[in-house]
Image 1 (cartoon, helix red, strand yellow):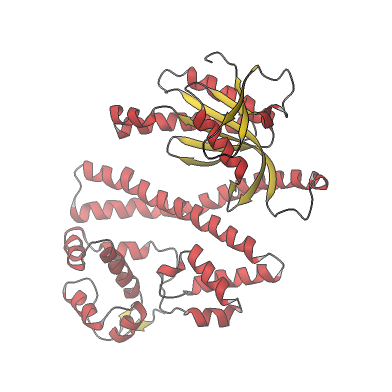
Image 2 (cartoon, rainbow, N blue to C red):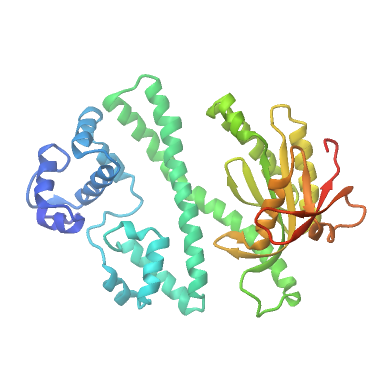
Length: 398
């Protein structure tokens, strides 16, 4: 049964003055009345508040809704959680979960709960799950890292799903001439079925990722006797590769953003194929630059050679430069950090067009006949103490 709210209760729940809520009723954004308001009205208020924070006034919202129909209702209907008519403040969260207050603050920060008035029922359910994991021995430090990764990754998934639908479905309907309530009805008709596919897709990719992670964890167990158990948590031996397109910024200026994005997509596909074929992992992409990690130097170097060859053979792609380094790294928040990561980045930055550079640390892990190398001698790298031995991998375009 749908609980009802008074206007005063709605004001307390959403931290919006009663007078302003009455004004929103007058301009048609909220249903009339001082009592018996449906619980979903709280979500309408939160949507109006968010639009206002982004510079869209309630009057502008009302104007668009008058033209296109009740947009607020369609967005409330797409919320993946029940309508929230209550929340717990900080003290209630601590009391209900028995978590350390400081830990609750950190979880709220990394999970994005600070933007809310408090914790809604689904937030408390998640916090209780975390409490159980902590009681089973999962350390707070590790839990915070997991929450950061999950929150950031799934926020990106949700954002991509919403924006891509808007750009490629809704906007194309507008381009076809649909307007007003006809546009709103067509958008809603397409959005519902597609939204229902999102959670199964996320679960599918999580399970595929879990399968890969378990294989990697097996290898860690098989080799753990070679690792000091008292070492810093997350310390691993890896080979790091950085690659980027040369002159991508002026290329973007010359070609325009859309054409440059097509070039970047083409390059991205090659990087992903090479990483997969050589047991590598794409850690992150920033613009036209990629960071990859490999379990060993041989996979990294042969992957780099293949990457160079494939890009060189594609007349539509600019030249690339690659730097490879090997050593101890720290696994943190789904990323790899440490001095050896910095060295790998600086090696790539010092490479010229079509050049593939690696360090002496990488060479020491290669078989003598693996690749043809030319020593460049000890080199000073920006921001790196001392000199690093650099070697150039000889390939067709070198």
